[in-house]
Amino acid sequence: RDHVYGAAPLPRGEAYPEAYWRFTRLGHIALLGLITNWFGSSETAIIAAHWIYTLLLAGSVLLAVMLAQNLHKLIRGKAASSKFVLGSTASALCYIGSGIYLHLTGNLVSEVPALFFLLLGATLLVKALQHNSAGLGLLSGAVAFITYTMKMEAIWSYFAFACSLCFA
Image (tube, rainbow, N blue to C red; front, side, top):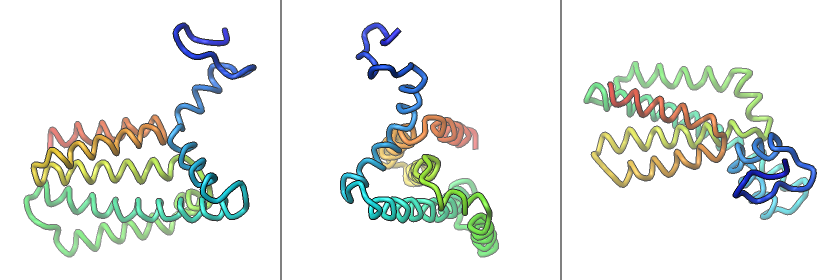
């Protein structure tokens, strides 16, 4: 079959699983397409994409530290101690020194923007709960949708995190 009932036909010769795979990374493809649109189809675009993804990964590490400290404040009701801050910072530095971080820095994979938006959405959700802010909660949901477009499977981490906050 070339198409699903009620849906637009697939491009000529393309099977269903190939079209599905592209959809699961639609945000990632759109991000790389935006970079290519800005810089053209050139080496400059590749270098720009590399640096944008490197900044997104570094931002992810900062968001992870912020999320840990905000979670501590939400659950304990007070700011994190200096030992907690030191521990979360040391964990971040260990991650930066790991092979996984090196692998993600050197490749334009969908995990990088998905991780950034996942942590941004989770941080916004915790902030929304701290300040009882519906606006931040809605923004967190919008960022969760962006996470879904970057890497479909990443949304389950957001849902699991949100559900665990309900029982904290």
